[in-house]
Image (tube, rainbow, N blue to C red; front, side):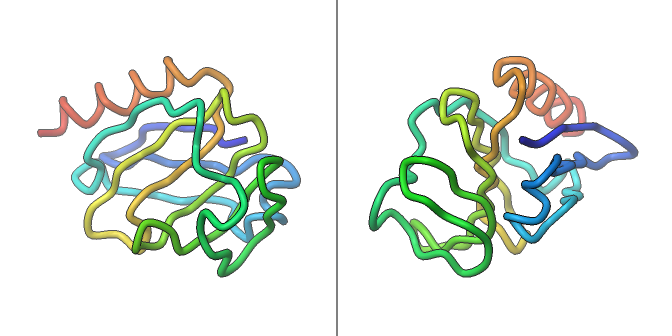
Length: 120
C-alpha cells in the first residue's frame, strides 16, 4: 500500500510495510509538473504475461510490486488488492505510470488531480 502526501510542489508516494522490501522502493517524489493526472483502475493488468518484471516481486493475479516493463515503458507497481488501485500518469520521469494501491482510491485521485490542476 502507498500513502500519498503533497508537499512543496511535489507528490510524495510513501510505500508502506513489507511492500518496501517487495518493491525495492520506499519513497517516490514526483514534481506536480510531471504528473498528468490520476484515475482509479479496479482491474489493473497484473495477470500472466502482462509485463516483464525487472526488479521486485510478482505473483500474477495476486500481487505485483516493483519495476515492470509493460505497455512499452517502465511502470512502478505496488498492488495487493486491485479494487483499491489508482494509476498516476507521468511525464519526464523514469516511470511512465505508477500503478499503486491506496486506502481510498477516490480520495487519492481527487487529492492528486486537485493538486495538479492548482499547479498549472
